[in-house]
Length: 306
Image 1 (cartoon, rainbow, N blue to C red):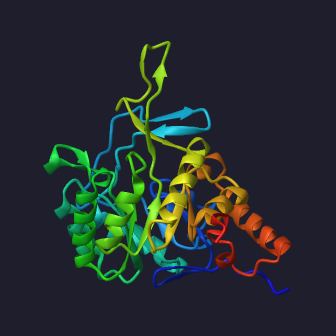
Image 2 (cartoon, rainbow, N blue to C red):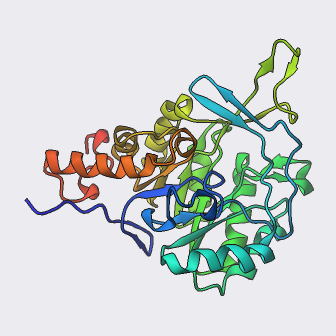
Image 3 (cartoon, rainbow, N blue to C red):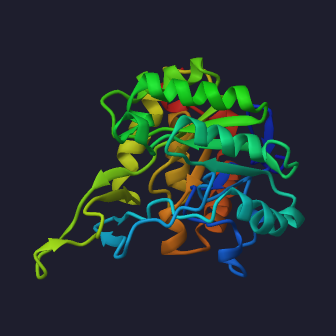
C-alpha cells in the first residue's frame, strides 16, 4: 500500500503530523536546540505569553513524583513585546505553524495579547490558557466556571479571526459543561487536559516541597484521566480536540486519537527524553503501515464503536 499520511486538520489549519508540544514544556523552541528543531512538530505551541512580563513563583517550583511531576512555575514569561522581538524571529525560518498560548489575569489582558499579536503573519492561532486566576473575581480560575470560560473565549474571538483553541482545566466537576460553553462562545478547537492540582510533602523538612505549596501534576500518572476526559468531550462537542497528558509512546498517542483526539500534545515526555516526539512519530508510522491505515482520520474516535 502507499505510505500512510500523518497529516491532520485542526479547523482551517493543516498540520503535517498530529504532534504539538504542550504549552510551557518547549519554551519558544530555542531552548531545545540542537536536540529538536521546531519543524519536527505539526505546529509549535509556545510557552504562555502575557501582556506584560510575569516573574513566576519563587523556587523550589518543580518536584518529581511517582509517574510524573509537579510544577508551580507560575507562567513566568517576558511579556508580549519581548516575545515579538525575540521568539518570533527565531521561529520564522522553520516555517512551522505557530500557536501562541495566551495567559492573563483579567479578560482585558487576554484581549490585549491577542490584539497585539493578531497582525503577526507567523502566528497561525492562539491557545487560551483559562486555568489562570481571574483577579477581578477573587482569584477563581476562568476555566472552572462555564460563564467565565465562555466570556473570555467570546472576547478573544471578537479580537481575532485566527484559529482559536481553548485549553481546558481538569479541575472541574464536569469538563463537558465547560467544553460546550466555549464551543458556543466561538472556540475552533479544544486542548485537554491541563495539569491536575496536586501537592507533595518533604517528610524530612516537614513542609511542602513547592514554595507555592501546590502545583500542577503532569506525566503518565494523569494519562487515564486525560483519556477519559477526551472521550467524554468528544461526545459532547463537534469541534476538534487536542489530547494532552502523559504521552511517552505512540501507543499513548493512539489511545487519545481512538478516544477522539485529532492531535496530541507532548509535555513531560520532553523532559524524560527530548527525542520522545521523534519516537512517537516513528511508532505512529509503523502502526499505520502494519495495520493498513492510510490516514489517522480512519481511527479517530474508533474506540466509541461508531
